[in-house]
Image (cartoon, rainbow over all chains, first blue to last red; front, side, top):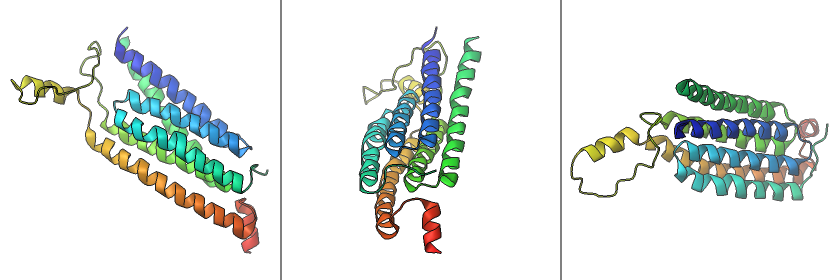
Length: 86
Length: 137
């Protein structure tokens, strides 16, 4: 069992979970939950960035896409409307 | 067997990124709500950044080599073999610099679009794009 294979296995699981998170963010009607799903997706993406040998991007991407952008989108939702109509 | 499994899992990662790209494009074009469009625009940008990182990625020279970060510890190199090993292990830094810039620029663009959404709600009283199209007449 080489370390190479372990890296690819963790990456495959993380990317499949990110597909699930993107799909849930797409079909969710409650926009607060959709923002939280997209934050989960960005956490899996930062794991992929780390596995593919770019830890410097993780240091920037994780605070931006996992912290600042969902917070600003939540501010926009709180100032406007929360539910997406059919 | 190990090589086949590694190639299979790398293909899984690559294909799931393409699925993410398709889902985010669908959400960007066909979802009517403005905030949902913003979320899907963010996912689209992140997926394109991930493709740029994959361009610069290089696997380890042999699968059995334990992976360790290529760090140069002693600056005056005693011989050229240190540099040869470094260049055989290091990934391409140019896409990483590009993505690092693109993440920050994406944050700035997203803040501008959030401000625009706030003004849109002040003008029309809704963020549903079909409703806004009807109100514009």
